[in-house]
Amino acid sequence: MKLHLEKNHAEYAGRDMDFFKQQEQKLKRQKLDEGGSFQQQNTAGVQVFFEVSLEIAKEQKPHTIGETLIKPCTLLIVEGIFGKAAAPKVEQVSLSNNTVQHRIHDMSEDIKLQVISEMKEAPFGLFAFQNDESTDVSSCSQLLSFVRYVKGNDIKEEFLFSTTLETTTTADDIMQKMVQFFDAEGIPWENVRGVCTDGAPSILGSKLGFQTKVKSLASQAKGNHCMIHRYALSCKTFPQPLQEILETVTKIVNFIKAGALNSRLFKEMCKDMSAEHEALLYYTAVRWLSKGNVLSRFFELREEVKHFLDIRGKHELLQHCEAGQWNEQLAYLADIFEQQNQLNLKLHGRGNTIIHFQDNLRGFIAKVQNWQRKVNKGNISMFERLSEFHDNSEKELDSLLKANILEHLESLEMELLRYFPDLDDIETKIVRNPFSSNVGVDTIPEAIQDEFLDLQNDSFAKDAFEEKSLTEFWVGLRGYPNICKMAMRVLLPFASTYLCESGFSALLNIKNKQRNRLQVEDDIRCSLSVTKPRISKLVQNLQAQRSH
Image (cartoon, rainbow, N blue to C red; front, side):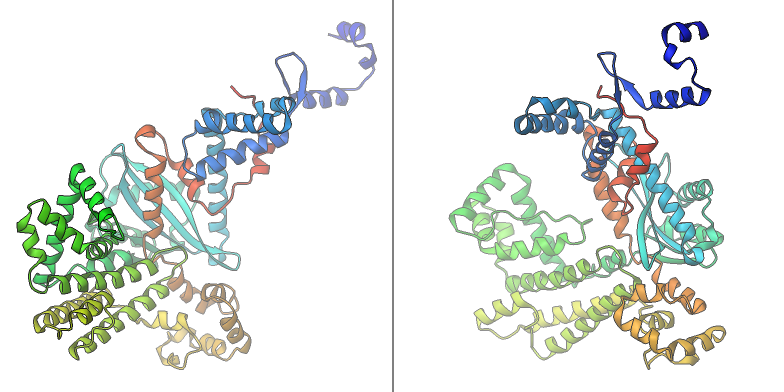
């Protein structure tokens, strides 16, 4: 080698070892193209690889779309605008199926590292999580978990992990997956302050349920049954006459929607009658908003429905629609379910604390009580459809209909109070407004009474309470550690499994019939995570590859 160096590369013969090591490093950062010459790695190109792959994951698209659609379209745009001379630069971008999959995996791992690090570095190290499982298109049971912890000056919600339950879906199976993840990532169980799940017996069981197993490892964890699920359960009770109305509506909708011919004929008839809508909506029991939407649409098309049933000879269904008080009862059901759906929608969304849920539920219970007082006096103005129908008919409110409405409202109030008995606990009152005159020091645990009195008389804290959101106020109140810890027991636990439910909607898009063997954790983390991957750091650790 020395002879080769002196004979063929005489100009480098006198260089020291450091020079050759620098050349070696430079060579490693280069890549050989088809012509045999060296081309410097295009860092910007690698950055694009990651950013496009991230967009593919966020939009929940197949990995192959990069090579089959995005890259060809980009080439057409570049050649059309900048000419063919610019096309080779686009050709260098690698968007093959395997490349996109690897990029998504790298970004998913980076996001997970950031989330785990933020959880461990959170003030007091406290966090809460929510879990739920559902069966995907390939009959695999997927477990999703989201976490909530303090980050910076506020509380952050983030995707934690997804995994497959290979066989059964008992509390032991779910707990085993949780323990495996916590142990692998070094997450301490004693820092758990809340766990929110659905209402399955295997989850809420007092002896062998999942929440009980979590509390055995995290003694200060607060278990919570999803409040949206509880609210949906509380709204299921009806007097028999109203229940029969709902069942009849379902039968009529199924008759019209189940057959393709009936659907087409009904659509054309609605067009001819200049109806506002052209189709009815299917009732789906598992969709919490479905009942109200079906009833509202049916009420708006009730005349068209009657005409269609008459044409098709379905007189046994038609006679239900023409019975006395049918329209009034249908109008009431459409109105009351619209009110219930409005509350349901208020409970959806990210960042909602237990206080937000309790405030909305207390407000709805108060409205139900007020509606009972009004109906007792013959006032139905709060039910828009029923009131309008009643005004047009110029009849007095039927006593039987009034009795049915009152019976339903009374049972609704009782069910809401049964499912939500703890809407006014003392800790929640303190956290909602520690400066309220309704919060007495004698209701505070003795160990933190002095600290609480200092807080109540802190003028700067009062100003911050008025200027900041509730979570920002308590997170920033580091000078009162014991009160803050109590506040975190209220603010950190999830009140619903909304994030898991929205995650399952994303799962349906990501893992469909065409991608039924996909391992979804990396894609779903990149799609649902708030934390952004550190692409610049990943670029530094990756050598660019040419398109396959």
